[in-house]
Amino acid sequence: MQNNTYDVVIIGAGPVGENVADHIVQGGLSAAIVERELVGGECSYWACMPTKALLRSGSALRAARQVAGAREAVTGSLDAAAVLARRDSFASHWKDDGQVSWLDSAGITLVRGQGRISGERTVEVTGADGAVVSLTARHAVVVATGSGALLPDIAGLRESKPWTSREAAAAESVPARLVIIGGGVVATEMATAYSSLGSAVTMLALHGVLHLAEPFAGEHVVKSLEEAGASVRVGAEAASVERNADGTVRITLTDGEQLDADELLVAIGRTPNTQDIGLDAVGLKAGGWLTVDDTLRVIDESGAPVGGGWLYAAGDVNRRALVTHQGKYQARAVGDVIVARAKGEPVEDAPWGRHVATADERAVPQVVFTDPEVASVGLTAAAAGAAGLRTRVIDYNLAAISGSALHAEGYRGHARMVVDEDRRVIVGFTLVGPDVAELIHAATIAIVGEVPIDRLWHAVPAFPTVSEIWLRLLEAYGR
Picture 1 (spheres, rainbow, N blue to C red):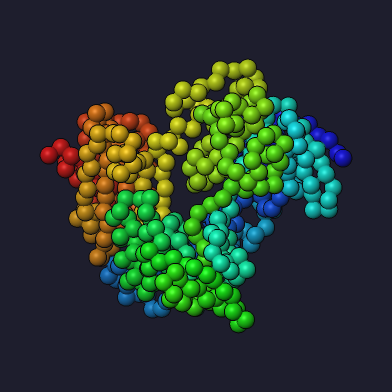
Picture 2: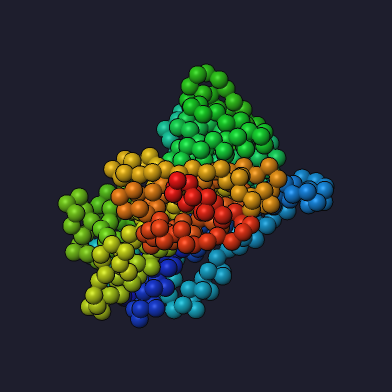
């Protein structure tokens, strides 16, 4: 067995692991990163990038059709083959040469294979040829293995080999009929994408559509999907699934109704990729989520750092915020705090300090790239109330903004601002409408900076932009 020693060993070379390693090296320490699949991870090949490439063409076509002059120039429907080819390019044709080249240029050592924690600050990596390399970390081991699709216990589901988010993102053709189990972000985005590509989509949303968002978000998305020809079945539940000899799928619902489809996509949630990384070697449960302290050290049931504090977890595996940008945010904190501890420098672990991920609790931004887009940050009105805050909720019709009318004919949208009345600061903000994704960062800054409402009044939005929604919300609040 080959043995190698580095300051830090990271298991998982997705965006989170890459950012941890980069901050470690930038801090003057050495880093080795372990990857069993493609460097770049889920986001690069089966999630963020390819899925948004699938969605963008339909979005651009809809935008053109909502503006006179451009509408008349549109003479056909989407070219599905061209959309898939563009998607392939954004997934780098499922090759990681460019990402590996970046690791080399950054001075980060790549070790390919399945990494397993085998003892204190030790990771054994089994390569494709069965050879084992032992990596020893002087200071820390970081788990950044992400998450995978969760499959529910539905009779015949696993045997039918349904699509998960991966297959939907990497499909080589467009199914004529697609049934989707789920009503969350992946389900609604893929329903939007495949409807625009020509699939007859049926969505089985047992718990509703975007049920964790403000209620009006799901209502807008459902209306749009139905106008696009999709069938949204809120409350519908699959009882069994069967893959037929001809390759089609039959889904039997709990009420006995049967649906036939060419493909079935299951998108009901995520499960941590911790089944085979050696957690049992440090007294943790294999396959479980990892609980972390404020500086993202893994802790046990008693709240004590595992092994005295050498094990960290960043990204989806700690279940704090399952979105790539928050994982990268955590990665920056992890890399920097490991360097600080290794060098005996002060650790800034107070709320909003350099070495903690406070935004995970108070200011997580998210965009759902449906039609219309849903962009949110912070708490919903319901979540703020459940947290015991005394709030005031301000709603405004986004279509009533002059910039919205210019942006698209028939613009439909809505905005909500949730204000903590005791501190007079915004704690939640949601926008629904075409192309609202680029507007949400202003709200993120307001929430993270805890900018008083009275000061926000002096942040004057340019006219005629959709950003004028800020003025209208503040005017409504002042009445």
